[in-house]
Every structure is written in structure tokens, then in C-alpha cells.
Length: 308
Image (tube, rainbow, N blue to C red; front, side):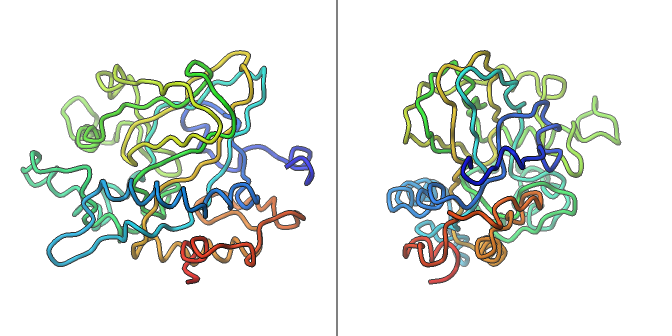
């Protein structure tokens, strides 16, 4: 970043994702650095992702929803928080989508038990219909199906230094989906869910769930942290950060029709140094001299881009 004068050129967040959850954390639109790409195509990372994918129900009698042993090489940003920084963190939110969760046919099937009177049968670990769902126009950052969101620590971080917090209840998604239908919610209100912003969770609409918000323990550089894609999460605020607070975001995104389709746009962005399609079109890396290139891909990396 420094060698390519990123901070001299950086113009600030290119979308309203951060504003919609109440802060502007130190998350930067860098996607194709050698360190990120080596981590994404690491054999150790692939084994962890395969294990995580296997926790899901990925096949039914007549459909295999995804291949747990192969992952989309999903590019995401980095967080770079220097020692001594003050940060407001990142407000509580979810990542699987927004209005598309209610308004697209595939997701209506994925959450079918919530709306057909069989709520007891809802299983947050069942991938049925999630792997083909298109985005609803105006949704943010949900082109791919990710079984788990994740980040890999680039520095040691104590549990009280602005780290991840979660509501560790994947099944809470059932309540979040049904909440706008309850009698205390106005007919024109979706409990904060709207176009072009992230899916929020709040004390106003979800106070009991917010009581379960819990932080992770201390982590060391090289540790990876994972959370179910439907889980409420946030980043805690910090004052006068002790040491660096750096992470790279790498999820588990198993190979499936939805992720295979997104892989085509990822290949194009990778080849040219552009920002990936799920993110604002900022394109800082087009002319960077040390970008990762096609010939640097391992077999895992090539498979993750649909090249092998």
C-alpha cells in the first residue's frame, strides 16, 4: 500500500456501507495484494474452508447444493488500524443480503419454513436454494453464497482492542426475518432494512438479541476467525489501540452455481486490477507494480477462479 502511494490517493469510502452501520472503520479497498492472494489460495486455508462448509447440509435427495471441498476465491478488503488509533468500530449488522432475502424466489424457498407455518423445521445450516439466489436491485455485497464470513489476523490483538463481536445464534435469523411482520412495526418499515445499505440489527427492533452480543478472545497473527453467514456481528470501538489491529477478510464460499457465476466477474477484475463487482468501483490497484498475476496462481487458486 505504501509503495503504491495508496494513502496519498485514497479518497475515502466509496459507498454508504460504513455510514449505514454508524461508523467509518479503517477498512480499505485493496483486493489483489500478494499477501491476500497467497492467503486465499493457501492449502491450509482450503482445508479450513472445506471443514467449515461441511458443517452445512449441502445436499438433498436430488440436488447437491454445493461442493464443500472447492471454494470460490472471493476477494474482499483489508482492515489496517495503526497503533494508537481511536476507532468507532462497526455497528451491529448481517451480511447475507437485504431486501432480496424477502423478495427473490430462491430466498423465499430458502426461508420457506418461516412463512408457511412450519417454523420449527427451519434449519440455518441447510443450504437448500441459497446457492442460486439472485440479488435484489439495490442490495449490498451479496452476489456470492458464503457459508461463513471470516477474517485472518495479521497482528496480535487483545480481546479488548476493537475486535469482532457476534450474537452467536445462527437461528436468530428466523426472528430477524419475521420481525417486520409483528404488530408493533409500521406497514412501511422493515426494521431498518432498505436498499443500498447493510442489514442492520439494533436495540430499537432487536433488544433481546443485542443482550447476547459477545466479543472474541485474544488472537495472534495468523489466527483466523469465522462466523456463520447469518450471524449478527459488529466491531467493538477502541481508544488508543495497543499494537496494530490488521486483518484480511477471507470467507468460506463453496463452489455452486451462484458462486461460479460470480467467479467470471472476479476473473476479469483480477486480470485488470479492478475492484470486484460486489464492491464500489474505486479501482486503486490498476497500475500497482506489485499486484498478484495469473502466473502466480496455485492449482487451488486457479480452481477458485474457475480456471481449472
